[in-house]
Each structure stands twice: as structure tokens, then as C-alpha cells.
Length: 282
Image (tube, rainbow, N blue to C red; front, side, top):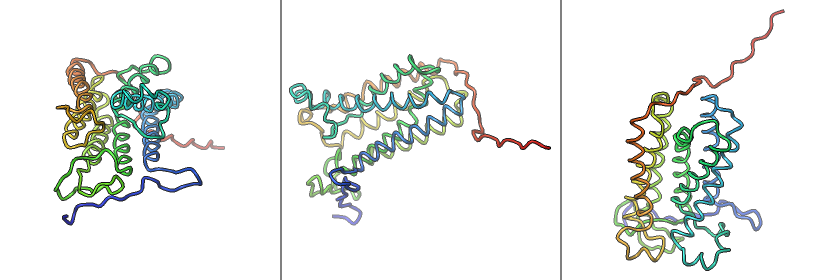
């Protein structure tokens, strides 16, 4: 074992309150929604969109993400089991969420939100929502790290992690970082694009970059990641890669479509701080 290899024995539980356990994974999910709300609130305020629409947006996205991620896991990775035990689909506390299902759930929820609530276009919403989603993806992978789950094959590289709580005795690729760090960089890049170029970017441009980068990273990392289900053992590409491919292709198609569109007119308030009211002179 080399000096830099890490023996990872972190507890997935932060603390206990009687029978209730507060877990790192739940905290990271909560942080995803908290920062997502804060980012979208500031975007809506910056572009003079009614702020009352933000609260409803959070509700739609939360439901779409959780329901989509749960159904994605049940049907993409363990269909035979859950089709015979349908009530266990509701037992989300037992674990089992799929990011591809979450992505599909968010897309559908946002479509309904745009029709029923939003005063902006579907492309406008997606272009801005991918910013906090990228940050949320980073948080979720850090939650996987604290759970000692979704890691990679054995490695002799100096940064390998020995996931003790998962019963491992040899170093494995810390694929949570392989995915999480690019997602964090994607968040920073999309945030910079929005702040500096929002007025000149064509619709769905940031959405296309998000899809291409995120799912290309996911596709590549899967080559060193352990299979999540037994049926993947004999597959040339695993389920995560097959689900990523159409999203990468869609991202490329949307990218070239976007380049042919004109930027959507938007009004931006550069100074979001309210000016103090002047005192009346007597």
C-alpha cells in the first residue's frame, strides 16, 4: 500500500436523535435543493421574473427528481425484482436512486411547470436550471462517497480508496470524485457563462453543454466503475452507459440547433441590492 492510498471508514450517519438517524446522503440532497432554490431565486430576481414562481419551481423539481430517480433505479437496474414487489418501490429510505431517472423526471416536471406556472419559455428554464443541477450532481456523488457506494474497480494507483464499510480490503477507484469534480467544474463554467454571456447566448445552448459534458463524463467513468446490478456483468456497455448515450446524442443535436437560433430577449438587473430609501427633508 502506498502512502497516498486512503483507508475510507467514514460513517454514513452524522448523528442520531433517538431512533432517527441524520445521514450525510440526506444532508447532501437537502443542500442540493437549498442551493438550487437560492440560485434560481437570484436568477429570477436578476431577470425580473415574478419571485412567487420560484417556490412552485422548487416543488416541481423536487418531486420530479426524487420520483424519477427512484423509478429509474427500480426499472432500469432491478426491474424483475420490483415488478414482483411493487410496494417496495415506495420504500425510498432503503436506498436506490438513478441519476438518469432523475434527469428524465426533472425534464417532465419542468415541462408541466412551464405549461401551468411559468411566464418564461421551456428553453429559458432549462438553460438556467442546469446550473444548480450540476452543483446538485456534485453533492449527490459526495453523498455516495460518505455511503461508501458506487465506487470503482480495484486499482494500484496512489489515490485508491479502501472502502472498509463496504467490506473491501483492496484499493478501489474513488469514482465518486471522478464524477463529482467534473460536475463541480461544470457548475462553475455554466455559472460563468450565465453571468457574463446570458444576453447573447442562444436558447438551449447551456442545456446542450450540460448534457454533453455531464453524460460524457458519466459514460467514461463507467469503464472503471463496478456494476450496480448483476445483469450488467456480461454487457459490453453497462446500463449507465447505454442510458448516457442517447442523452449525449441529444445534447449534440440541441447544440447545433441552438447555434441557428437568435438569443431570447432578456432584461437583466446588474445590481440586485435594493437602494435604501432617502429620508424626506423637513
